[in-house]
Length: 617
Image 1: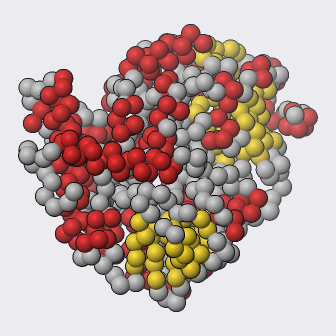
Image 2: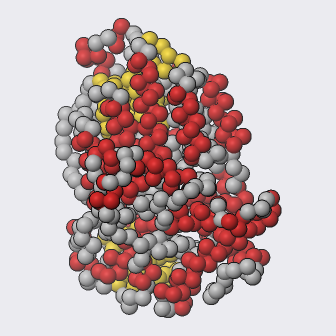
Image 3: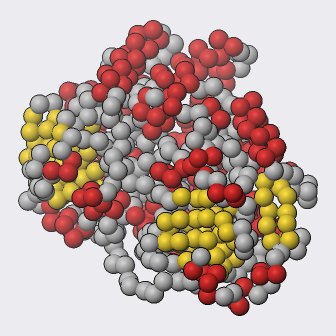
């Protein structure tokens, strides 16, 4: 299926057959393969190549709030808490600085695919205007540092520090947090904000431990080996190197181009091609932005999110690939007067037209027709995260770049000096994994540490059959505890993760301040409130199982195993704008329904005078 596929005369039965065939061959290959634990020799893939950990003495003290994670979740929660008058707010992160994914993702030409005026938070508060419409990683990382400085979040932060255990100490009404640096910290409130991209993912490829050449994950890019720098994509040390790159998702779309320009030879190993639309990046007119009325960023974020959620709006303030696709799929004038099966059929036709545009662009850019055919994606538009780039496809026209399409099978195995795919050995000097992050698990595996609440209840045990929360943020029997929702979360998912995180941060800070304003020390969630929210999630749940089962395997559908996801782990089905309104009404009521409070113990009156034994546990 190639050429002009779009239009009213398309054969949807033939399109479905093609999509199904492409899915099935990948589904068969993915069975029995999963993610692998990064321990033993593979733990080296987690080493920090950017900053060496500094030795320090263990910390034994008490803070008001401890945020696990110093990415935008931790920064936004910390900023909101500081604005509400909390002083001892501590960020703890395995990384060497703030920034989260933007600390780690420093691969060449890394950028955010959401417009920077929407994505980069607290622009008005910090007085910063991004330089480019889609900001590069160094600028986003610098902005994260700017936020930390602006709100004094470096004051108590602990970096290169990994939390190992979080447990509620009923004798003190405090959380006891322990780390791999020997720290033993008491905290009134704990916020888990590790983000959806903190756990490095390596594919389960036979022989992965045996490869002896240089290898690293894109989130641990080794510029010492490749040359260049985060702000310099000329990887001059690869001029005489043969490089292999595994993965063709969002990361590949950005760093394959500089690799292709720099390496002696580049092999790109593909299981499934990505959608690649026009990016159209360019500079921002800072003066125009400064002249906007106060509150402009919030309005822009809400407009973008409303379009993403399928709500009709009077004006599209962003006008990019995301909003174009969402308007076409959700709010097209072609849907007027349609309902039921007719509406579903027309939406399917629109989806196919959008994907046909993507495939047509491949034909227009890639000169070799065989390579072009291999780069065409055959699945529904949102089966995978869409991508946009203006150089990725052109890279496959370079004589030193070869696409190794594995026909959905993935790489067969690794040997000491080679990747084996399609029965052929590809000798390499360097192998780079652009395979993303583990996003679909909960409990200890996802967090990397135990959380133990009242009566010795472990969060992983409580959630073994599915999540139970209020609003996706608080959990019964886990007092003074918040968790920033992830992909399967009982909250919402929007493409602009930062916008929804700002809403979560506002809600968390409101609850913490409400505890303090009431002269209390502890809040807990009533189990009946938790049960009510689970019922709401199930009632509002959008049954997307059929759609996901029809998708090619990927992170959106548990690699094709849709039934592995508990139904109650669904996101709120009413969409982001409706969900944010629920949170606001809950706060504005002043009653904080579902929460119960308890007052201070005498030991809380002077935290600084605690006995040393309190910190030893």
